[in-house]
Amino acid sequence: MLQKNTNACRFLKSSLFCTLLLSVAMLGKAQGPEIPYFYNSNTTLSWASAAVTFKSGSAMKVPFFPVVKTSRSPFGTDDYSRDINIEAKVFYVSNFGTYFSIQSGNENVTGRAVLLGYDKSVDTVSLVDAIYHFEKNGAAMVVLYYPNEQYPYKRFLNTVLDSIDIPIVTVSNKSANDILTAAGYDIDELTENLKNGLYPKAAELICSFRLNVKGSFSTMSSQYSLIRFNRELIDSLDIQNTLKINDDACAFLLGLFKPLNPKLEQLRITYFSDYDEKLFFTSHFGSGLAAANGIYSVLGAIAPSYELAVHELTHKLFSSNWNGNCSFLSEGIAMYAQDMSIESNANNVATYNYLRNNELMPLSKMVNMDIGEDDNTKMGYYASGSFVQFIIEKWGQKAFLDLWKTDREWKQIYGKSLTELEQEWHNWLSKNV
Ligand SMILES: [Zn+2]
Image (cartoon, rainbow, N blue to C red; front, side):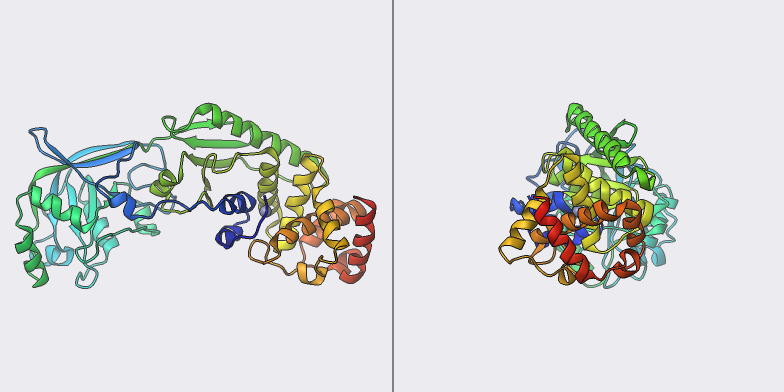
């Protein structure tokens, strides 16, 4: 289960999901489709679609990728609480700076889908300002493309835009041309004009743009967890099981660490059925993301197990109550709790085997190891769990917490040097396997 893989590094910083991701990465799975997958006209999404439409009923499918807010939800979904079902006349703006200087920028865009071509090499106004302008003037949504780039994948982590919530989606340059073709533009002529800085006057087009996104998620909660998910894509029984595993793990941890009287806030998790769905909604690759306002994860990327839940929640419990610490102590306490939760002696047995084979690294090296990035990550996981168990069984949890609040001040807390502790640990190990 535990094996070095560099793909996990960036997630380890957040502590959460480290072992889950290590396991997933070990299976050799990719972290999700590449972004062009969403801009491909052959791709269909079961939870979202877009099209150019005419009153007659004819329609042309338009592949797109949504722009995501800081809260890791697509613009227009109000943090997973709203579906997007909009059909609006297209209002074409080929260059925002020109639009604003030549026209007044006060054209009526109310209720329109603004098709905005943004060329950062020539546009004099920032994209954030442009989008903010249209939202303030009542636009129903913004369809963004970059005339000089095929794929305009864009993620706004911007507090100004965080205050608005109209849908913002991106389409490829090709799709933008398809939309303009549908509206009767001669693309060759238009491209030539744009190249020469001759921007057509912004105007309402003869066609509409329809956007549908299943953005309202179901919510299920229990004492310790609140879970959001799309009921059409994930079986609520799976969510119920996950809630139970999380609750059992939380109850176990509150019991295990009772002497420290920790608090455990309700865990907020948004689950996705697969990598593509998670990428679409969060603009984040990979199976898990621990953000300030919760966790975003692919359900079933690895079968959720009780002991892994204990491991991950130990990270959360310690960091939320007493901040972080070095990799060795963070993983150590999580591996310790993991073993305790299933009455396993795996950490000690594995560590003792390294010791017996003269492979166990000196403790002075391991306490500085970045577990997850180091070549000896597997050893680091087991040995940290074993060492933490040793110091907790010998000197108790309160002393461990005192140590946690320092930067590895062994002598100050335990009255012994690391080398002395190491010797005692090795002796203890031989009696505990
Ligand atoms: Zn961990």
